[in-house]
Picture 1: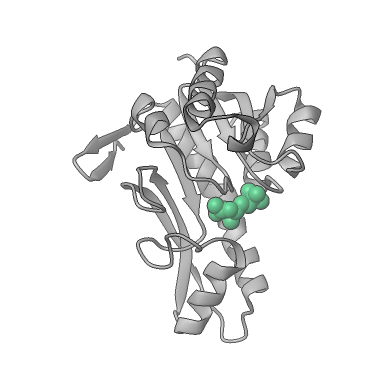
Picture 2 (picture 1 turned 180 degrees about the vertical axis):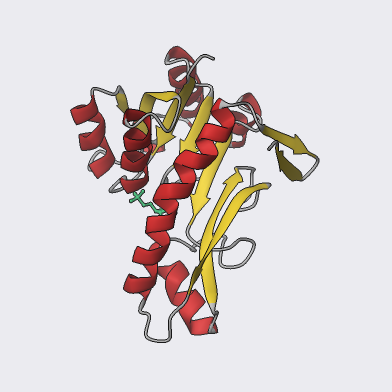
Length: 208
Ligand code: GRF
């Protein structure tokens, strides 16, 4: 079977991107990362791409006179690099609807909580974990889902829980959640490599 041709979008440190690359290196994920795209020229993920010899592109709205030109460029860069599945890994910008339409059910996101709770605009980084602790949840976790036109909203592909401990801070909880993120994302991507993921209306079926 042909390896999955991945595009990874990251705005920051890129530890999920590293986990994906590690899984590929170790033979657990039958894929190649064809492109790392970032909106942020200072993203740590760009360094990782450079070290791994992975084509990296910085693209953001500010680089273009109009929104359409930006979107057209995003789509053409993805096509040029032959990307067939996009994994958002800490990408802090909304994906334009035109790009979602161009790649239907081909864009995934990872969120550090159990959606549909603790998601949506402004729910990122420590804000998510602070909200979970503030609410008094006994479990939190990770969600991998398809991207649609709303924040943290598309069909859920996989979820895994982590316990919330009485003495947790946002930092300790984030670390526990991140460890699971690094496991689940490569696993889910491998399901795609094996063509086991199917969408039926708003539900995702993963063949055993
Ligand atoms: C992760 O917690 C992910 O769930 C969220 O953004 C964070 C990215 O971390 N979407 P990293 O850049 O992959 O280290």
